Length: 452
Image (tube, rainbow, N blue to C red; front, side):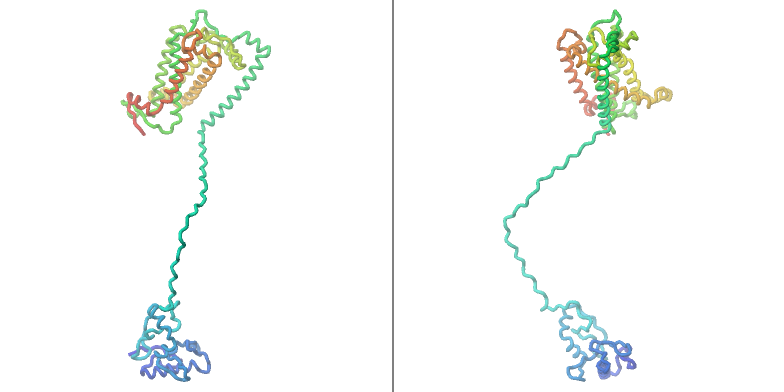
């Protein structure tokens, strides 16, 4: 039994009727007559009926002859003959209940109701033809594109470390100050007061009558060893100060926990040799009586040293004979270096070294902070002393002075100069060799060396 729904017109019977195909045909014809009535509101497309009741699709299409009707399937087939191929090609439509009792499912096969047409109906005959194959032109000889020359990247400017900038500024300031002092000294020694002062104090250091004359051979050798070790000590100390992380470490076998950097060990080992050489020098200095050359024996050394300094600044070298005695400024400088600067360097270095065991009483006696504040300025003093000493030796008669200091002779030969040049090569080579790869084999003989 067919399920009935709402009527298709106000007051009409339920749809579909239960009296078979004739009643369904009459209902469809009645709906068609109402659509073509005097109101003119109905259309074959199913426009709205009077009274606001929505009408669906016509069940029977009007024939070309007035008032004639046909079967629903045939009428739809006549109204949309071109829809069947489109439906066959497109997506298949869902078929629902029959419109008449015992009829075929609606819509018939091959029929597409209005409003359900595919968006782009395509038939096998209407398919666009494939585009003809593209024929590429024959390859011609390639024309090379102009290649721009490579632009070299601008080299990165390496920034100097902060200490280099400070050193340059300090050197520039020192040069300016030195120039002003030279001008002032030359102006003052040209006055009557200056000439009178130089006549009273010629700059010669007071010496006892029994002071030894000449420089012995041991003093010349001590001079070489002192410079050799001092340069290496400064070199390794500067390396320790600049390094952030040691390349290798050294520790005594008896106490593996007391580890220090490898270059710190080299610095302290060279310090021990330098102190030993200094001890030998002090002993021989007093045993042979040479101490009177470097230790002042009268307070007149102070004005004599001032006079010698004024003569150096005015570029008028003081009269001296280093084979017999030093001038007042040399004597004071050697005394301060040997008996003041060297002990300060040794004491502060031992406090900072691995040899100073931490003990409360000893730590209060020499605090570690004080030792660090003293040790570095003393190193700068030694550097300044060596630079000025060598500069004055070369400026005031290089061959004779070097013959005294390195040849231990006063005959005007070239022996001292040759020995000096050889010593410079040896010292420079040793300073360049102060690297972990060279120091490590030596350090292993005295402890354990380990890498990072």
